[in-house]
Image: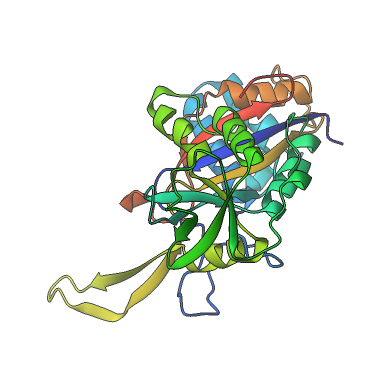
Length: 309
């Protein structure tokens, strides 16, 4: 039974490869996607593991802190039958997807379906959203909704990748952009530029167009493995790898259940679980593969019920 709620916001700083391990198409190592929408996701198990790694690093040799880690995240696999952890981390879902733009370098794109789902998830987490996704309607695939002061328009058009859309000014886009910049993007000095840019670079597309960009505008790189002696490519050492681009924004609902461990280690209830997670003061985490080549660096912002982000 859920007794405390929150939201994890993830800002992708370096390309993120949260892989599936199997390939059905042209890309050898594709990223994780929802089956029914094909929108990118990052599975909750990977996020929870990254959070646990931070908690364990902070606990180190402190016995009491290590007990807290097990209360919140659960015991190690060899002791998994003792009790479950109290923290629930859902899959991270895409909220804003960056797409190359003729004007303004790139635009943050989203769509009515994504906004409606975010509104539903936010309200379920007791996060107050002052706008309604039902007021954002894009009935034509050739139309893009932008804020009145948008900087990604060229004349009366928005050109994303190789596709031109009719730009339509909507005040609600500015309202959504302003709220996201204040409540979702990191509240740090180094993010001031991005917070100010978000409302002016936000573009709301038709659901179909957003899905297509999520499928075709990800980063795909070709990698090789060389023979040490000859510096030539090893047999089977050539592959392609997909990644979620930098500047992507995702969110993951988090919940806490009653503490199940017998030794509660001063974490008495579900609200204390989320206070513990927030108290870890997590700055950045690494998600997905290719850690040693700098991929998957993600800035974290945590909002909890009854508290600020």
